[in-house]
Amino acid sequence: MAHQLVVQKAAEFTSSSCRTIVLLYSPTNFRKMISTRDQSTCQYCQTKDATTIEHIHPTSKGGLTTPDNCILCCVSCNSLKGNLDIHQFISELKEVKKKEIDKKLSS
Ligand SMILES: [Zn+2]
Image (cartoon, rainbow, N blue to C red):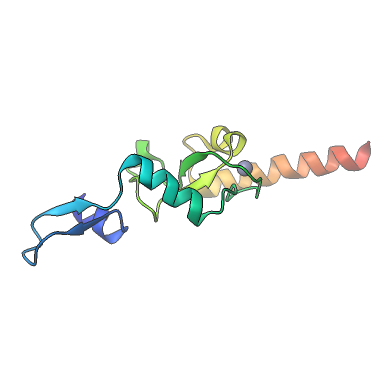
């Protein structure tokens, strides 16, 4: 896991021996960094003022809390995604958006 944290830019080696790593972000700074990087926008639906950190590969399935695996997300998308694999979720999101568009067109 330590190697993955380094590869995914959440930690770095402290010495040339590559035996010790240090995390690059505190939880607070990690949240600020993700929010700044993603410009406070949900990366799935583009809603502004997104507030939750989403693990693209769920932690329950081995995903890590790293910049490469985390994006900013709105509460709605985050609860819709839950533990779904990213490909399953994109399909679900397309269905939800399609139903919303159909509803708008029919009214
Ligand atoms: Zn969203």
